[in-house]
Image (cartoon, rainbow over all chains, first blue to last red; front, side, top):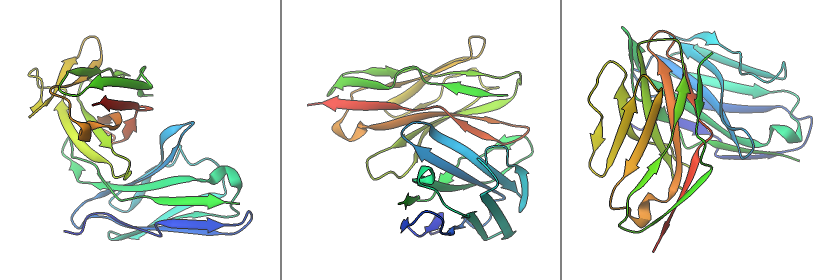
Length: 116
Length: 114
């Protein structure tokens, strides 16, 4: 399997622009997670989906952030409008969970976002 | 809410020596999973070791082992015979077997001195 695939790897944009990050989870995994990593706050869980349904979005910083998972093989994280403080590395991860078992979390290579 | 705490922002170890990274967590659940992930400069997150809370035996993976103290809610990682390639950020993580929500600590940067 190709692993979790994220795009773009790097994105530089100007304040106020819309940013869309994309993720393709590992085939067969039923849970997908979006994390944000910064020096100050470490690795923060933004939102996670189980069977394409958002389960917990309490980590989404504000209404400017939205995430969707239209099917089992694709998810997006959108920031509109973007602000300089959104600059970070955004990770997507997937896993197979269920029956009381939490499997290994597999991460993509991350999308480094810079908002000028 | 569950929390994971790594109180050592940075650690150093001499090559071939042993180092222990600390992690504590807070939960009211009895069934959960604990993980250590490694993030080298390439920023790719790699699973190092995993522990199921219902297992009393500490997990081991080659030079990596854990000291899991369930009552104390402590989950430390021991790296034996440290190698230059072990230099990385190490994250402790918790996942509930009910919500499957993976929570990470703030990480410990490990430096390996030649």
